[in-house]
Image (cartoon, rainbow, N blue to C red):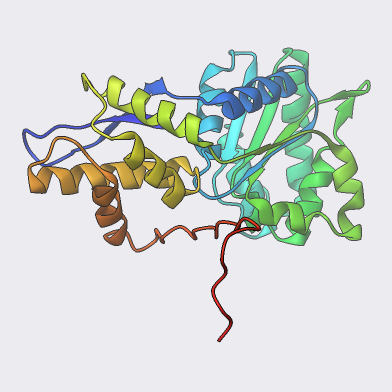
Amino acid sequence: MYVEHYSLKTKPFEITADPEFLWLGEKHREAYAMLRYGVLENKGILLLTGDVGAGKTTLIKALVGDLSGDVICATVPDPGVGVMDFYRFMARGFGIDASFSSKGQFITVFGTFLHECFNRRKIVLLIIDEAQRMSERLLDDVRMLSNLEHNGVKMLNIFFVGQQEFLVAIGTQKFRAFRQRITLSYAIEPLDLEETYRYIASRLKRAGAKTNCFTKGAIKEIHEYSGGSPRVINLLCDMAMMVGFSKGVTRLEKQTVRDAAEKLPGVTAPVKKKRKLRRDEPREPAV
């Protein structure tokens, strides 16, 4: 989701990200507004899901950067660890300078931290990225942390960010109590064709391009290959520009995108839908 700058002076298409050029589509703006509201209003447990490369992590980084000084935030980028390791990582994220060797000791220390933040009128936010990697035991322990309240006010907001597998994991009867505690949930959908046009145009404009080097047909091909995933769109655009540069062309057509896709192992050709025949059209005889 960050617009990347291309430089042909040294290495072809050297990339540097600049947070100032964050591009948000309609779906991302809606998710951003809703989740920001959830944090600032102390809504408790929030959930953001989406496929790989949908822009979840980038959206969270932008949200954290936009939150005021009234929000104390810690992010766990990979919760695929044991319970105590998770607690220690979480404590470091919040700047808690204390040691503990048991869950009970952590709860005592963390409870004191939350009360101090509450008295200072600070909002405490824990963001757990890649939530689908959490074990059932850890997920249940984190759910218990959400019970920490003072005079009916949540002292800890927990923001789960994960792929669709996380929804499957919490969809069982075992996690019924957890699902009931989720106050706001949003699923980021892939970009549609129009958003893909605007996304690519925005990236090129911010990179200093005067015109769009991709034809409409090429962008449609990019959308079909990527399935609307911003990450894959980035990869395809970068490789297509590399291929175009090597061939000395300034206008990138469908075939350039196809050639670029062949050079990307993780990108597969889109499945073409069969056109439905009209009733009056002849059909091929069965063999």
